[in-house]
Length: 108
Image (tube, rainbow, N blue to C red; front, side, top):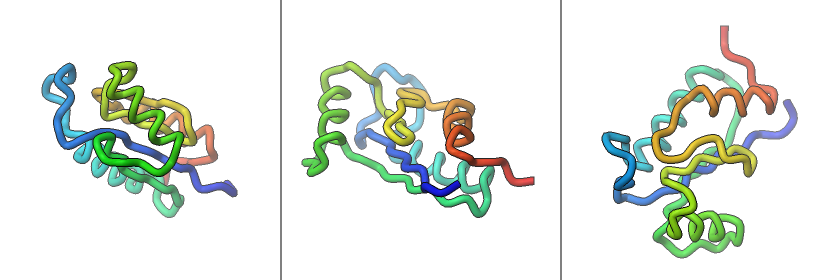
């Protein structure tokens, strides 16, 4: 693995109204970071939380924030290397599958 995968979690402090009993976007970000670190020990990745209600400098991040605010996506929205792997109620399996496409292997 040569490139460190970039994971982006888009969301806001307010819990998605359509995502009953789902954790907040920030909680999802922290949970994903911990789960990925546990499953893929010593395999570097970059994870960032993007608050869709704050001004964004990055044009691509701003585009996703606008799409969420226009109800095209539920939040939290999770992207790995620009690929949408989950929205609303996030599940680990699709996240792990996408990371494995980028060379990750589960720790023994």
